[in-house]
Figure 1 (cartoon, helix red, strand yellow):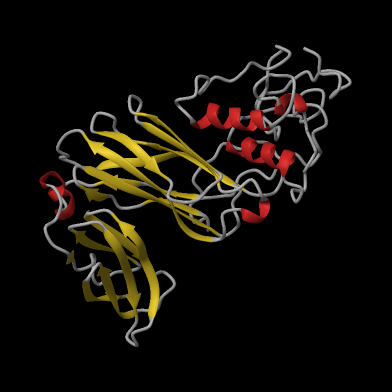
Figure 2 (cartoon, rainbow, N blue to C red):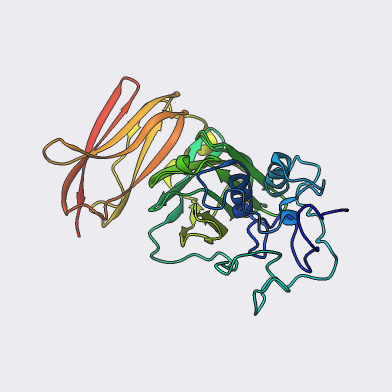
Length: 360
C-alpha cells in the first residue's frame, strides 16, 4: 500500500478511523472527518492530522465513503462490517493513553501541539449540558421512553449508550423525530444495550442549537409483568463541540426508570384509554420538578402549557402530534418563583386545566 502522496514516511503509530487523533474512534471522528472534507467554515477545513487515519475503509483514498463507512461501523447493526475496525498500520502497537504526545509516538504525523487527548466520558454533576431519560409513556403494549438533551453551547454531534435489563425489556425501535443529516441506532437486545449516534448537520452553521430538545423516543417491549422498577442507565455519553480537537463538552447524565405499580403503567396491559383525561400533577405542592399525566384515546395533536395567575403562558411542555396511550410530561420549575400555576391540556376537541403549587 503506497501512501507517499500524503506522507514522507509512514507514522509509527495511528488508529485507522481516529481522524482527530485523540486515541479512540467515536462520533467525534465522524464529525471532524466530514467537516475537514466538506465544510469551508470549519477552522480545520482541509487540514489532515494523518490521512491514513482518515482512510477508514482502507481503500488508499480519503472521500465521503470513509465518512459513511465509519458511521455505519459505529452505529448500523445491519452493516456487514458493523463493529469491525480495520487494524492499525503498521502493526507496531498503540498506546491509547501516552505520557508524551509526540509525532514519534502518538498522536500520528503532523498533529498540532494544541491536541487534546481523549478523556473517557463521565457524568459531570451540575454541568449545564444535561441529557435526561424521561418518564415512560405507555402506548398499547409498548413503553415509549423519551431522551431529552439540554445544551448551553451548539453541538456538532452526540452519541449515547443506554443499558437495560434484557430479561424484562427489549428495544423495538428508536425514533429520532428530528431532521438530522445522520442518525443511527445500534440495538443489542441480548446484551441489553442501545447505542445512538447523531450528527445534526455536516455544516457548522447548522449545529444543534442551544436549548432543550427531545432527541429520541425509544420504544421498549415489556416481556413480562413488572414487579419492580426497572432502571435505564446511561453508560456513555459524548457531546461533540464544533471546535477542532476540542474534546467533549461536560454533561450531566440523568438516568431513568420504567416504573412498576404506578397507575398509568398498570394500564399498559389493558390496551388504550377510552377517554381523554388529565390527572393532578404529582407531587403537589412541588419543588422544583413535578409530573403531569394524561390519557389519549386516539392519535391527535397535543398542547400542554403552563400558565401563571395572569393567564400568561410561561412554559410549553408538549406541542406535537402524539399516539394514543397513557402519557406523562415533566416540568422543571427551577427558574420560576414560588406561587400558584395552572397547566392546561388541549388534545383534539378536549380541553382541561388544573391548578398546582410551586413551593420553594
